[in-house]
Amino acid sequence: MQFEQIEQALQAPVMDAVIALSERVQTLENNPEGRIYTAYRAIDQTLSLGYSNNINAVIDQLCERDFVLIASRRGTRREQRLLLLTLKEIGIASSYNENCFSASPNTMNHLKHLGWPLGNLKQSTQSNKTRKRFNPEH
Image 1 (spheres, rainbow, N blue to C red):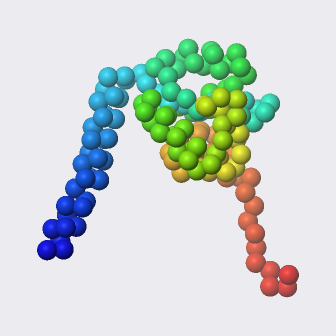
Image 2: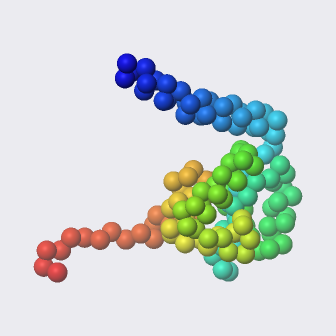
C-alpha cells in the first residue's frame, strides 16, 4: 500500500520534469540561434546576463556600453528568466537593470552552481580564494 502512495506522489514531479525538458528541446529546435550569455564591464565590475536570438547584434550593443562578452551557449529565454528569478529569490539584487549584477564572489559562485556560462571569469574567481590553515596555537 505504501509503495503505491509513494509512486503516485512522485508521478506529478516526474511529469513536470518531462514536460519542462520537452519544452526546452522544442524551444531550442525552434530557435537554433538562441543563446544565453555573460558580459563583463571591468570599470565597475558589473555582469550583464542575457538571452539573444542574434548574439552578434548583442555584442555590438554591449560594446557601446563598455561590456565584453565573456561566454555564451545555446539556451532559451525561459532559462534566462528562471535564472533572474532564482537570483532574486536567493537575495542577489540587480544593479542598473534587471539583467545587471555586481561581479561579487557570492554572485559568481551562485552563477557557477546554476550552470550559467562564465568562461574565464569562473577561473579568476577560483584563483582569488585563499585556503585557511588550521593552526592549534592561535
